[in-house]
Image (cartoon, rainbow, N blue to C red; front, side, top):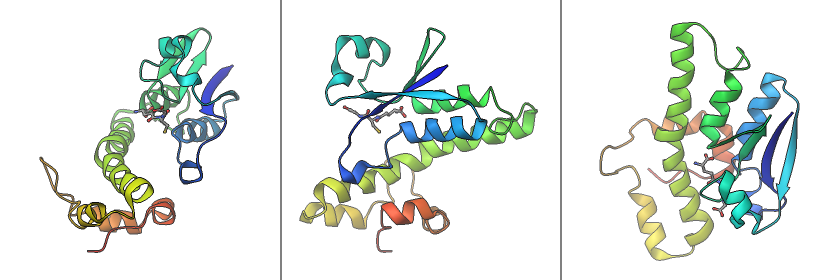
Length: 164
Ligand SMILES: N[C@@H](CCC(=O)N[C@@H](CS)C(=O)NCC(=O)O)C(=O)O
């Protein structure tokens, strides 16, 4: 049986956003049974948990004595068990992996930036100024993000896009 860790409680702004969701979602899509191990606040920093997840974060999965952390790695691992998620054939498999990496590497950092600005610093002037120029980073701009945003109801419900 697969066990996934999650927090028993998170503040309202984080509800539905915690990264165990993507693992549970993949497990549901794959039709795999799993159990949830709910952590109390602070449990993530115990030596026992840190030995499993060195950064003190959720999620991890445990299965037959094997432990995995990092939601992307976990979702890939689940994909190996379900062709609905990760096709066996070369090009389709490469495309699925491409989108997984894009979600983690090209999209999530930007969305997280906005979420942090809004959730923690929304009333501060510097945050309002920062929000106006979010497209530039040291390596790239992201000209495609408004259209991607518009097509993604989950994001538009949770983090409002910046003014263009
Ligand atoms: N890159 C990690 C990030 C995991 C992560 O940031 N988890 C957050 C919840 S979404 C966490 O456990 N935070 C608790 C803490 O940092 O104390 C992954 O994708 O698994």
